[in-house]
Length: 189
Image 1 (cartoon, helix red, strand yellow):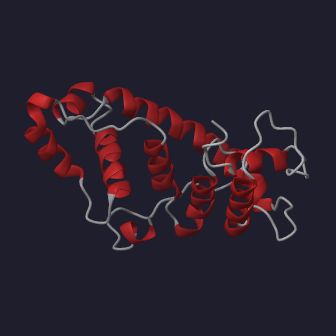
Image 2 (image 1 turned 180 degrees about the vertical axis):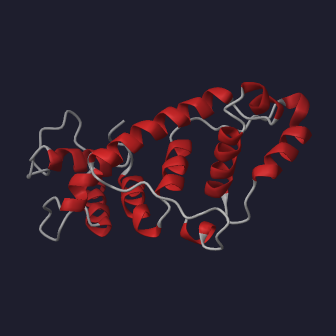
């Protein structure tokens, strides 16, 4: 699995543990050197590692999240754009199975239901709209079923969101939001 996966998270965790010489680290199945180099370059690009390969303060924060490095940085930086609450929801929705149901016998109805949540700026905002609608309908399973949403995935997303919010609170990263009525709401997200 490690040979096929993005090593960014693995490298970040090893750096957090104080392992400096990743080239000579005793992997059971060592990854290809190119894969390791790509992971180091990615982490440097994201600001998790400095140019000498040392873990930065940002990298230490990123390593606290059980997410891919890109998503961890997105969560950390979102507070600067006053949208960390929304990014928490998006990160949680991306971490669980697809919430949209599309039964064979109701594909047209399911597509119409999904269209109600669709945002022109993309799938992330569509996921955010679906999650917010579910929350505004009191997490009702009948409402979810009627709108072709997977209640189990939404509950998992709620639980993941809570765990990520706890990590943000522990790291003193503010959970904030632009008012929905503001023209800056979707721009910030």
